Image 1 (cartoon, helix red, strand yellow):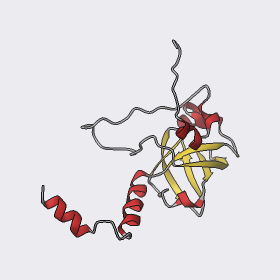
Image 2: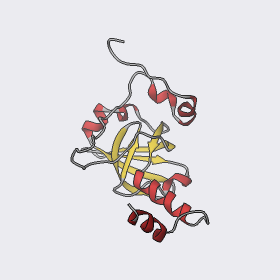
Image 3: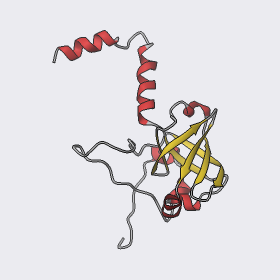
Length: 159
């Protein structure tokens, strides 16, 4: 394709994505390279949940976008943490029971997929990577076959 590119999505990916958001336009941000200065959002490009836009409020110099997700994912959405919506990495402003709020500047609204969103639009959500990792570690520490922190320290000391 001279004016674009094509991709293949596995059945696993297709099962977890809002596929209609991948027609005509996608948002791709360059990945940080090892050795680069560490700053900004830490995201991986994985989809954790499907969200639904419940409201978009035009505030003049920005937009508040409210997105609802299944409650089982809300613990991985952290105020002032990183989140990705359809490939656009952003900062979360507020988190409630099952809705979180983003503030989008006019440039982002104009230049990304956000320009197409309206109330009821479904979006692909990547939650905060650190929140997922911490939750996974804590969950598995409570199981009898997991390592204790002293066991982890002992393993580290052996290297």
